[in-house]
Image (tube, rainbow, N blue to C red; front, side, top):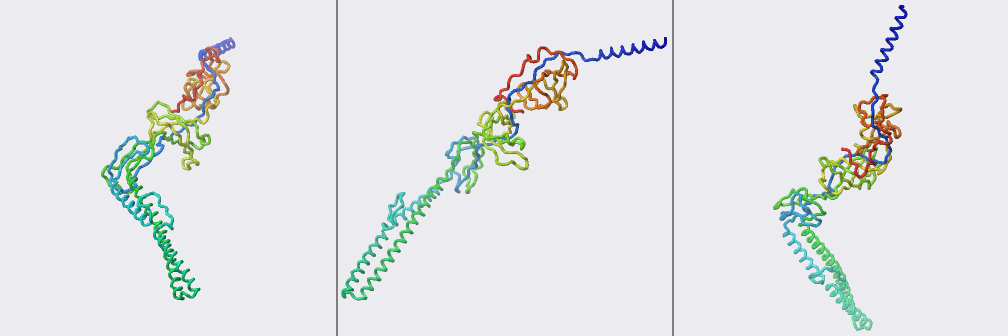
Length: 409
């Protein structure tokens, strides 16, 4: 009887544990699933940078003088060649008149008209040279005549010596006249250069815009005496803008000129785009980054000095495995998806990559186009699931449009 009692008690214990286990088993849960799918999405590099002016120049005085006019202020729009400032020109006008008078004097001394732009003249046509040439020719004829008479015994030796000396003197005078003529030609060239310099100084009294742009700063004031090189206004060209980016060393080999870049500005929801225009020939050694510049058309709220978050599109279409965004769960920095295998939930730790509207790239942790649970919060590995309809008939995320993908904020 005792043995029988023990057997009954043991049997009762096993039945109680079995019933307790059944009560603690997780219930089957209905879920919605979607298959992970491979799609072509843009490959981008996320970088940060800042906007800068395309051109920037501090206009300064090339000649000294009192500032007579300054018709621009901060924000004034300028076109190339517009007069920005004017130094008092009277001193330079008088200098121009003086240089013109000196040139006329030099031209007259050389036998040229008082005014004119052509300073060329043959040396034999200079008045002093022609006069010396005539004297030389007369001395030569006298020498020949006296030599002939000397042969006939009519002219004495002293007369021959006299005409020889006269011919020598005439020849030397002719050479002197030629040298003086060359000196006068050089003087005319010098006076012409001085006149051109005087004209340039007068022109430099007017400060002009070197390119289309706008005034960023105006440190000078009307009536102020300006030394040579004194700053007057700072002009910037802001269309297009330069987007300066720093690309990390591990990704710089993917960057090429002509690639599209998209950027976001703090406080602005618009997405702006440009193209890579310039690459630095070398990396910056302290930061191990490559300086990249893109040209961005001036529009909206874009202006030099703004900080920008940007992405460089290095490949327009690249295959990647993606899942719907609602299939991702994250806890303590770990991201997971819940796959369905043999009717049971199976957690998988994944590494995510690019993101778009409604989709997330799976870099690793999920193989092939497996079905994953949407909104899997509360599911545990091994828990049985009831799929609401075939996995391949679930609503899928639309193919992303590369032109509408926005940089991550």
